[in-house]
Image 1 (cartoon, rainbow, N blue to C red):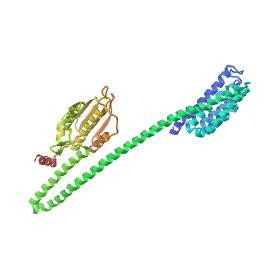
Image 2: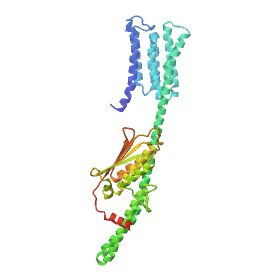
Image 3: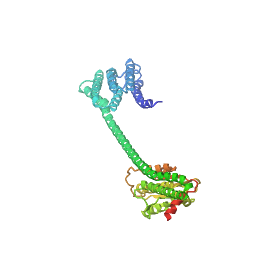
Image 4: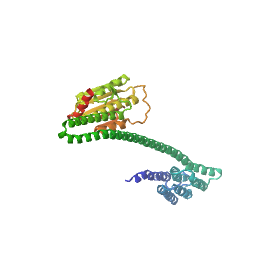
Length: 426
C-alpha cells in the first residue's frame, strides 16, 4: 500500500460510517413498526418507495463526500443540494444532515473559511428551506417551522465550522512549532559545521606551516648528506645532527599544536605545553572531587604500563583524556549531585576501554539550562581521528553514559621520540 493510499483510508472510512449510521437511524424504527407509521411523523415505512428513495439519496451523499475530498466546496454544495429530496422523510430529515456536517467540517479544515462563506451560506439556506418544507409537509405551521429550520442549519453548518476552525488553528500552531524547531535545529547544525570547518582550517594551516618549515629543511639536509657522506664525513655527521634536531623540533611543535588547538587554556608545566595522557585521568578525577563532584575511578589491567609504553599513541591518549574531561563537565552541568563512575580497562588485549557513567540529578538540584554546544561533536571527531569508537546515550536509570574504545598497537622503537626526551632532559 502506497503512502497516498494510507493517508486516504481514514478519509474514506468516515463517509461509510456516517452512511451506516444514517441508514440505521432510518431503518430501525421502520422495521420496528413493519410497514406502518414510524415514531418520526411523516417518515416512510420500511420498503416503501419513499424509503428506498431516501436510501438512494443517502448513498449519493456518502459517495460525494468520499470522492470529492480534493474539491470540498463542491462536496458541500452537492450534499446540501439534494436535501430537498429528503422532504419525504418528514421529521426524520435530520439523517440527511450528517453528510452536510461532515462535508462542512472537512471543507473548513482543508482551506481558509473566508473563501467558503458563500458556499456555507448557500448550504445553510438549503438546510433551513428543506427542514421547513419537511415540517410543512407533516402539518406544522407558524414561526416554529422557520425556527426549526434555522436551528438545524446552525447545527449542520455553524457548529462544524467553529469546530473545524479550532482544530485547524491548533494544527497550524503545531505545524508552526515544528517548523520553528526544525529551523533551530538547522541553525544549530550549521553553527556546529562552521565551528568544525573553522577548526579544521586552523589545523590545516598550522600543520602546513610547521611541516613545510621543518620538512623542507630536512629534505635539503638529507640531500647534502648523500653528497658529503664519502667526501666529507664530518660534514655529513653535522647534517645528520641537524636532521635530528629538525625532526625533534617538528614533533614538539606538532604536539604543542594539537593541545593548543583543542584547548583555550592548555596545561603548563615548567613553561612548556604538556600533552595529557591516560595517566592524567587520576589527576582529572581528583580535581573534579575538589569541586564537590562525587567521582570514583577504577582501573582494570595495566593502564599505567599502556600509557607509558607507547602502545597507545599520544593523540589517542589525549582524545581519551578529553572525553573523560568533557563527560565529567557535562555531568556537573546537566546532572548536579549525581554520582560519576570513571572506568579505565586495559585488561582486554588490543584495546583500552574508557567509560564515564553518571546517574540522574540529585534530589532538589536543578540541572543547568541546556545550551547547544560542541562537546559531543568534539568527542566524536577525536575518536574518528584516532581510530577509536565512541558510544554515548542515556542509561536505564535516567543518567548518561559515554564509552570510548581505543585500539592498542604494538610497541615499536621510537628513536626520534627518545631523542626528544633526551633533549628535554638536557
